Structures are given as C-alpha cells and as structure tokens.
Image 1 (spheres, one colour):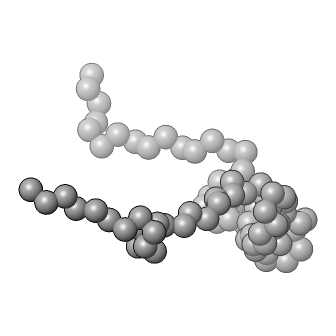
Image 2: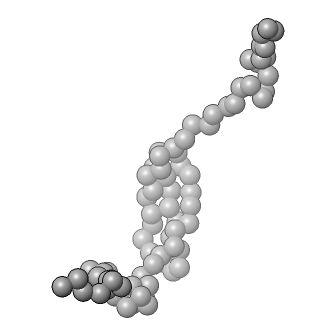
Length: 78
C-alpha cells in the first residue's frame, strides 16, 4: 500500500487562523436611530440600532411586564 504525504507548506494545507476577538462593546448614548459602538479590546467599530419603548408597545407589552402564558390547546384534563 502506498503512503500518501501532503505538502505541509502548501497554502491549502495550512489555514491561517485570524485571532478571534470576544468583543466588549462600548456604545455611545442614544442619539437617533443608531448609536456607534467600539470594541474596547480590538477597536472594531459597529452601528447598533436604538430600540425604544415603541417596540414593546407595538407588541402589546412593556419592558417590565411578564409575557402572558399560552393557553393549552388540549383542554382540561379534569
């Protein structure tokens, strides 16, 4: 049986792994629809959407309300 050797120096055999940052975002105070955030570790910049109370009101609940329990479709087992 022939032994198969791969060229360890070839670009296909060696995949460069870029370091992965576990971002810790520092987000500017809300001013409009988005706020700029910057990672305090790597300096990466990203825009974050500012979601206000209107999203909760649209869903029929507020931020402090607990979600309603779903009714069982099986009926009572009494």
